[in-house]
Length: 321
Length: 216
Image 1 (cartoon, rainbow over the protein chains, first blue to last red):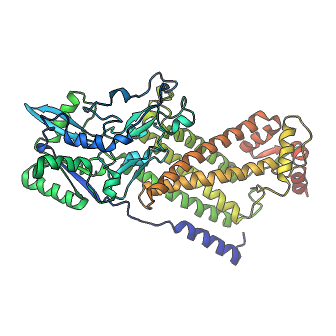
Image 2 (cartoon, each protein chain N blue to C red; image 1 turned 180 degrees about the vertical axis):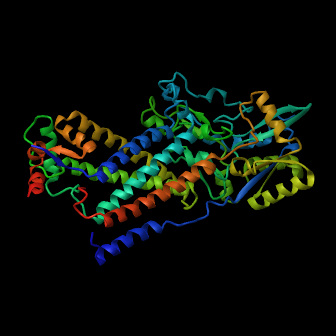
């Protein structure tokens, strides 16, 4: 095939367009992180409910779901997820309780672990949501848009800690085919998104500090400072760390005087609804990422081989289109 | 009367690579939606793995490797060779309607070139959908690779657009397969996409413009 100057420039332009995809742009560098020092948490004993839990519930009360009843089951399944009759539960995560204090006994010691979304660095929930209802904000927190969420609960399945909680009978799915697709809206901690965007700390952090002053369980701050402090305290105080490596890194770093392997074993033993696995691979980063590189390469390779094949084959020799 | 060559090996390979990887993408794409568990698909013997979103997503990427390779090969190969026979021509819309009615025994088929008018329209519509589903898919891949950065709202929009265009792709795929299988007049074309050839008698009757050009 004869290539004239015009065709040559067309080919060059096409390849320039493909090559113009930025080679490397930093992902959202999480601005903030939370340090959770477990030994300081007593679950606010002698108080009706933990301060952090109360602060979270009070702040987000207006965002809690008000399902339309009767709620239809998730056809063809007979069930549906409805927590609206258990709004007062504070011993677990629900659509009405986005933070809870998990109590476990290890060697006659009670350990209180505040549990909520870890706000992962490479959040599978955000990468996996087919409706784009989840996003990772520049501050480092992951947020569910309740107006877009279809309630398929993929985010919960894909989350190593199964944090997001579903409420049926609310949300966008009701406007489409509520019997056949969708299941409600997912709810979880968004790290007080509106507040941290204005530079105000999350409600749980402030509530805890009000009670425990400088012995506060939570410390919220710039990510690099929190990470540096966690590393320093691990080295100097001999405490154990959780959340820095799990799932490729998170925005929630736990420090404990009890090894996390023991916490994991205990939670497994009591079949707790929310586990704390020590080994958490980020399967998106580890496996899916190389496949993504292969995909980009194959796309470019298709353009290159298509061009070469067109140049090398004589028009008419291959009966094409 | 003998046989007449309709498709070369490259076109046959392009078609089947897109078709097979496209079917794989549809299946794994539906799996990426939380459908298989709810609809008991993962409970079918041998399909337990379909409830693992990571496995389904990885397979989706693998099928996309073949799909995107072939789509880009197709675009560049035929663009440079200036093979534009599948792009709609003036008056194709009316002829396509006549052709579809004729397929169901209403009226007479208009004289066709190598490609039927409705095929040309289907090609363009399929092309538009493939453009949207694959470009949003590629942007999602680049985002997941963290090579590009999107505003959270843009990211949400891309995900949604990929899901919607994927749904339209499935619809087009079903219509395409139905038209080939249900309309008897299209059966020689089904055979041809395997063998590359059609009977001269068929070409003369249904594609007289192409037939005359080939013979001249």
